Length: 519
Image (tube, rainbow, N blue to C red; front, side):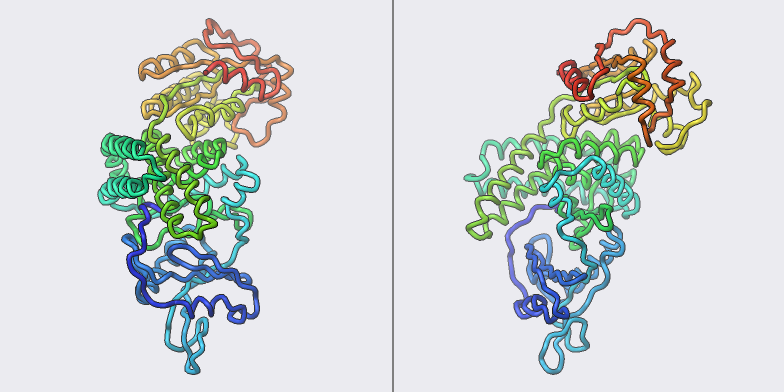
């Protein structure tokens, strides 16, 4: 969630009878029922339907203590989640007491409770479960990023000032909660985390205000982690968006994305996290998003700190058998928050070489390993050329798109974008042929001008290897074919002070050599 969770302040109506009724298979035509409890609701899975009931609770950030409030929350959940999960959320249904005193789902008697009715999906297909079982493969990570980017494009704009003010409260609420549990959260590290978070937020305020003016603060999902994404009909679907507080659901779109990135990083899925970030930026094509990556360390750290707070709160009321595991999880989130808020310096890496040398494969493999998390942003000349021409990555360009003038524009755009990324404190990898000395020199100068480390890697492979690789490509952004590969044999590379990397062997061998070069 967007804000920290605190202890329940006050109970509301007694719902035990309703819960027993919904857990009874007879209520659902004899279908077996599975009950799932959360701190704010109870979900009943039966047959091809799921019914979600709000708990009669009151927290500092939500109030479901009356029937009217629960009905309003159910209606809000239905309306909001239809944006994220069309076809999954069906209706708000009453639970009634009939004249004979019996409860009925969707009856005509006195309404005693409300439920959100959903189309049931396979609960084993949530991405947290898939991640635990086999990880998140890069193809799924790519599809996930596309879904998030598309969703962010259609959610409404939200006023930025209240959200920016709320960030300060989240930091202070986390800090206060951590201080009350010194046995779990080291006081010295709590002090440092609070200080680092306040400093980072103060530095980011002008950027966040500018993003707000651009319309980038929106009413997003608010709780975008892997457990709230499921494969439905084979595609990622976001569900269970925050419905009880527009403010908690709101934020810069990068803050919404940061929850997902943090969750992937915490699980050790760095390659998937890097793909999500890179694909998201490729989908939005917003130059301002390259500046906004400056906020990622703070955003991801805050998300991890909130998760630590939430998990610790749940540990306090968990059964004894689950308490140790919950406390350990809270401690891990806290450690991650402390690490993320202090990002390592960025670097700029150029990956050059003739077509088929393996540049893009190396760039994608190296990117997750470059600090800060979730790894370097990859800028690829093939993709940039098509973006400048208003084309999709998989569209083939005509020969006119490869004039010297257009190529100069592509390289200039790559240098400009790389400069913005490293200026924002994030690492970048630029993947292009870099056949001309002036192209290589321009990238090195950009790194020097911004005071970041630079590594130029020039991949070398024999003609036969390059021809084989280019011939095996399918659905790639590159338009290079065998004729282009042969023509490049005539290139005069001139003085080349980039480190030569033997790329004629297996990709993992090329990666190992590149790692040493940038270490």
